[in-house]
Image (cartoon, rainbow, N blue to C red):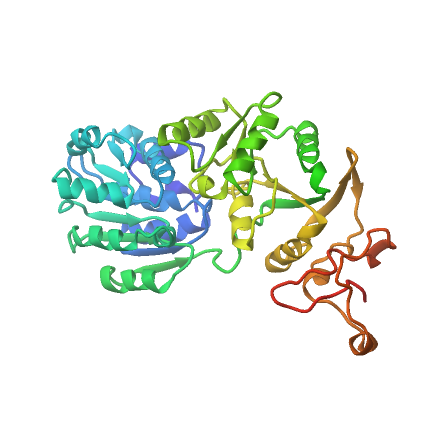
Length: 428
């Protein structure tokens, strides 16, 4: 569907065209028309699917010149800021005034700006602070958006969110977006929404189909050399490098900062520091961002060309979240993960869960070497194949098999367990 078919205000249509958008994404095509009709919406879609426009466009279509009319709750400051920026971009010809409200900034300055705002985007904690101080009243709010509700639940904001909902008019329109639907979210739906239209998109499969996944098998002491080799040969336009810990991110920053336009973001940075880093990344002042998983929540830059997993995460969902920073809004991306032999089962779990066979290469002594496609197949890490004779008389080895074996018969992390399963040798 083309945006012009939605019969939007000329000012909104002009802003959409100037942003370079012509056709709607699937979730926009399904969610915007009923939202424009005033229906409550439940949107189930992954980050990067274009869901922000599904609530901003209906809000802007109905916005009046004065007064607070829409409240958007977000789990993180970064996401709230990005939603506000998108609202200002799409509503610039309407001269819409959107205000971001979150902790870490002057509450008095925010209070002075609240009376002039038509749209407020904020985190639950700071919104409650303003309500209790008498700075903010929600009785005029006609549209309420709960963005990434499951993340608000994970972060402990669900009771605050429900308290805020009760401060709004019962006549409001409610739009809720959540990748998953835990029982607590279902309870909010049943108690606070009216016959919502349910839009499901990419729920059963992660939104990583546009990301090419590549594995570099490395030795632990060559991980940094492999990363530098990748940066030097690939020359990514915009990239994120994920580390497992804040200390590891800082160490990697010190290793790279002399030769690359790089910065780091993690939980130990102050809010002003985090905002400075993100602004430099968005504007291109630095094109490589080192991040931990928690700090990366809310980073929404559409043109990230590459994601590097300097270290694999502990679970598949985090891996999906990481590589999903690339390949957003229909664009293609590349994710390169540096994996040691000791991480065999984690790699197998990823391939098995995503039902993909990622491209695999071996990095040794500064060179990339081909890997037999069966050598590190997910079936070896997850479903070991035993002969009847082996089951009866053999115990698999308790140590990894030597990598000097022949072709695909080589094992990969032979003595490790996967998901509580049996030990296996990697042999057929």
